[in-house]
Length: 282
Image (tube, rainbow, N blue to C red; front, side, top):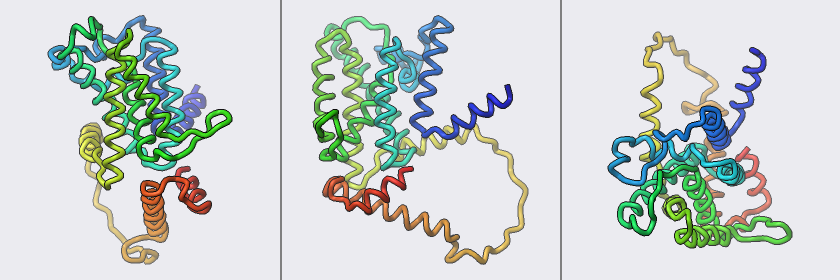
């Protein structure tokens, strides 16, 4: 039993951050089936007044799903997008976009039901990771719009896919899942705005990242470690080891390549630059 738990722990530690979110979604879904409960205290309500009583639901709703196909398609999208995203950007940025997308989708959902209750009708609340996944998808499409991806026997530019997804969500506003599609559009808007601001050199997720870091630090041990004698490391140059210096240079090279992509597209990269970016993503 110990070896099994250790094996599971090792496998989980090797997952990237978005794959860990997929696992968390799956565990939550299975728990919901076993406990025969809809986790109503974690579902995002439609009205702002109800939301004020349960403010945590602006995040927790994105880890709940109605049925098998609901979670299946969301997690498949997240897996595919995650592999593409994390080859180019950091895990922290992925989390920023994911959670900000969920928040934006949730806010637009509640706003729609508050302003146009007759149009959207009655609802028990919002669940699903779709808004968060949309944010990541549209971010990639907006950041590298002219990047080609293989679709069966032909190539499609990323912005074609993004535009088609948004168009389907707009049409969905007139269907049975109007509230869900409104949340999708909230996530899509966040992803688009995030990408456009990042292309200008501004990371709008930094503030949210600091809030999350502060929240996590609340649960970390505050024990003070004993003072240690620090010996000068003669292998350091200018305060940096060779490994730290190489890491710094590699990061600078990645930044230059990403800047080139933002200005001229992925196809403008040389074969050497593409290979370097692929290896760096691993």
